[in-house]
Structure formats: C-alpha cells, structure tokens
Length: 146
Image 1: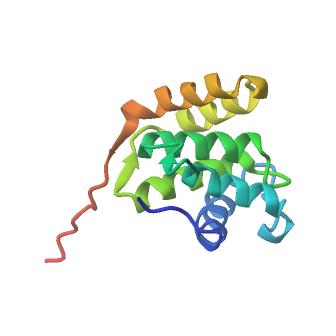
Image 2 (image 1 turned 180 degrees about the horizontal axis):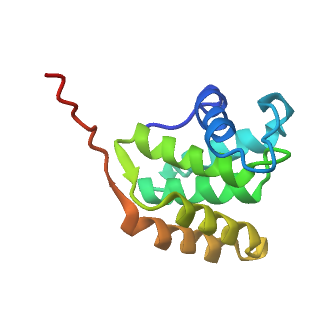
C-alpha cells in the first residue's frame, strides 16, 4: 500500500486543485494550512491498533482520507477541492482510478461537508458506498506515436 506524503499533497494535490479547480474562491498558499490537521488526515489511514490496521482495505483508507480532508479543514479555503485531488492521487499511487464525472464527485464532496460530524462512522460508510462502484484499475492510455 502506498501512502501520501506531505510533499506529495503540496506539490500534486494542492497545486492541481489551485490550477484546475480554482473557481470563484482561490485556494490559499500551502504554507497557510493548519499543519497539525493536514498531518493527522494523512496519518489516519495508516493507523493500527494491536498490530492490526484500523482501515484495512484501500477503499477504507481512501474513504477516511477523503472524509477527513473535508471535515478537518486543514486549509483556510479549498478543502473540498484539495480533498478531491488528494483522493485521486492516493488512488493513482495505488494503481486505481476514480471513474465518474468531476462534477458528480464535487457535489458529493459538498454533501460530505454538509454532513453531521458527530455521525462520523455513518458518513465514512456513506463515502465508502459512494466510491466503491467507481474505483477501477488504473490503465495508462497508450498513444500511438507512428
């Protein structure tokens, strides 16, 4: 299992969110993040208890990562957009891809943001159910150069 590093989130997810999903509200510089929150989001999918992973499957890890990147608010703005890019990059590192229209995923991210934080387990289960049918094996596109 490949996990995300802080450097990857900065240079891949955050940068791509700024470039591709800026919208009406710009995403502030990475240095303005709430570092303790972001590091917690990234480390949670790796947690163990009594030598057992708390999030044992890729889908479990992707779901908690996506949920926490939205609900923990590690950035002053752009949390849903950075969460989307973080999720996509996490799946890519693990040879998976998310097959769905961008706006469907963004609307779902908005729904997660509006959900009740005190119902975390239910919300994470909802994320997992939403993502499961859309995660596919990553297959690079072959380009014919002739």
